[in-house]
Length: 615
Image 1 (cartoon, rainbow, N blue to C red):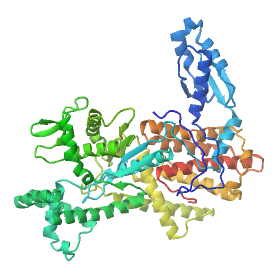
Image 2: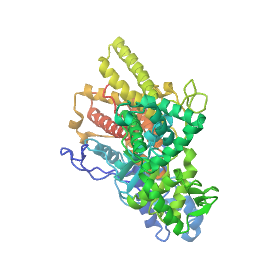
Image 3: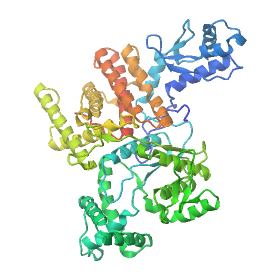
Image 4: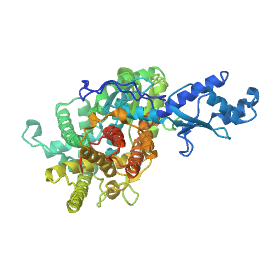
């Protein structure tokens, strides 16, 4: 657990860690919920010193207040008689009386049933929201900074990235950004499949198809070829016994460090890497490649050590580790034929991460089909003494599959897996159409029309299309499967990135019209008075609560849900409160708009979007 986080405000750092001097440091802010909980914890200690009880706080019914404390009923049931109370309401009054003096609550009301409901003080709300303006939004995990390894993306060499790698790459990147934002030291590892028996057939096929490539005379397959190259090699392998035998010899040659095999392997990896990097570039994903081959030499000594300690035992010719608490089948540290497979590599990898890298926390992102496998690896790590919960934390962050309209795995018409690059291209193409039709509408209505220049339109379409795919993926509960749908993804009125981009651009348009630069706004003039202003202020302050919840259960859709709610509250604010009015509220509302823009901007950054300043 992460406990109550702090939404800190150190001086903002620029991208390279230099401090931006013009913004002064502010006192750290906390999630509202932990602020309220902490005050009620003090009240409980003061009212009932003999009872150790944590405050139970939930969001209140807006008619009565913002938050409510629900401890009185439970306390009455367990301790009412001994404490001398006839009704829960008496305990509730005692809790109210025990609250320390503070500027956070304006009203504290006790209901006849024993609920204690509080309303947050408008001037406290105004101050907290004012803090957001002109400062870098920061947050520190109160559990302290940890060294975290995130293992994500992990495509296979010689195969193109497909829609399945989309989820791992997108979810992994956002998780890393959130952990970094919370002050953790994050190591992003891309565990590519760059080793194993399939390389035998690829190397053997390369000997045949490109005989002169070692000398540089036989050309080199490019990656659009690698897929068909892989298929052709597989066909030969399945049909030709002689080729199959040579392929198996090539694996032995590769493992033994033979020159041709190693060079061919290196070339195949280089070609694949180039195509992966083009996609990572577009998705703005950063990860250090550390493939399966990295762990090869660690496996034999590790197996010997586990054998000596009696953890690894011989069973049906294989060397196995049994994890009866997790599954009936064992992990195979060494296969029956003496080779090493996934289990061997993953054991070596978790050993290396916990023991050599000294990670406090490791998160693995793969589809849910591999959940049992990873829980067995975690169990083996506990048996070996490498993983010592709660000192170290291991999570398998599993996700469901992407489906077509038929609710089956997403495939092309001809039944092929959908290439990730085609998916991104199609989304960008459709985003371009959305932008084009918007510009046309703006032209016809005579309102301010932007993005007239085709190059600007293309650039905006790339940002919008990629954001739409990302947001649509991340708004799903990650453990469920979802149906891929371009129309929903780019729906300007629905829960989509397009809707959020429009909300952001609208704030920017209001700011341009106001002719006041956001950094010159008089923050001290912020007054949260109208119910719609209050609702927006409260929502903004719940941003750190959202981050804190994600640290707990790694469900990133909490952030997309928060943004959807925030943008809807913002719409309500515009409907009820004219921002560019002539009264004293004008500056106050512009400050509120800027605070909203700052929270949107930070959230977009965590989700991997670059917003459009104007659409």
